[in-house]
Amino acid sequence: MKKTLKEIAAIVNGEIVGDGDIVVTGICGIKEAQKGDLTFVANSRYLPLMNQTKASAIITSKDVNKAPKPIIRTDNPSMAFAKMVSLMAPNEVKKPNGIHPTAVIGEKVKIGRNVAMQAYVVIEDNVEIKDSTTLYAGAYVGHHTKIGKDCRIYPYVIIRERVVIGDRVIIHGGTVIGSDGFGFSTVKGVHQRIPQIGSVVIEDDVEIGANVTIDRARFDKTIIKKGTKIDNLVQIAHNVIVGENSIIVAQSGISGSAIIGNNVTLAGQSGVIGHVSIGDNVVVGGKSGVTKSIPPNSCVSGFPAKSHTVAKRINACVQNLPDLYKKIKVMEEEIEKLKGKGL
Image: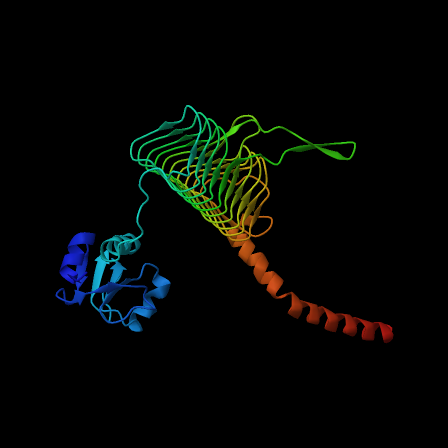
């Protein structure tokens, strides 16, 4: 698909700096782009790449006033670029239609209009699936579960019994929702299993990555609120509540009964112990361990997690330990010499 910069600027509501008649024929990342491609820069640290890219034009933020190539200045270059990707490089993967004859559907199942099921999907009794939802090959949906409209459930997702899923939810392959919480009581050295009879509620517009596990509550509900995005390989334990529009990055883990606020970011490999709360708008740095509650609007890092400013100072001191050790060794030797002189 060919488009001029003027046409692209109109689509993304942007402002052209440079030749608006340049024709773009492709779309690519800034490092890989070639002549004829449109690319973008959203982070200021990558602005120097504008001098190296072979792209014919660049979508930027409105903070950029000049560049070696024609640019389109926008409020949100990432979203503007994503919009152009959808237009210029549409996804050619065909969406499934209808219900495959190998799908196994139980009794008293309510299926809405335009629901699609690929091969070997299993739907247990008393399930409700609303309009235009797609279940890909090998997905399993347990008894009394409800799935909203316009959802995408990718291959080999397991949704256990009594789970409630809202509208426009995307669940990627291999994820398990509603598995039993890790509940045991040790009696005379033997771990006795505690029944987990609660459920999981996934609200509207949540996206869950591949191989994520979200455990059912012991009695009540594990809740992922609307708009939250969960990366691959995340573990969310029983009775956790995750607020709206939060981001949980790969390999993070949240222990039982923790409460995560709205607009929280848990960076990669971060961990949260049970029964603590993290306030709204908190950022938890990568590989951090949250061992106590965190007030709203904070940025923490390290283990145990503390103010990011404090954590950086501590880390700077730790980096200086080898030099400090050498200085102390020299001082000890000098002290021993003075002792030898009777001082």
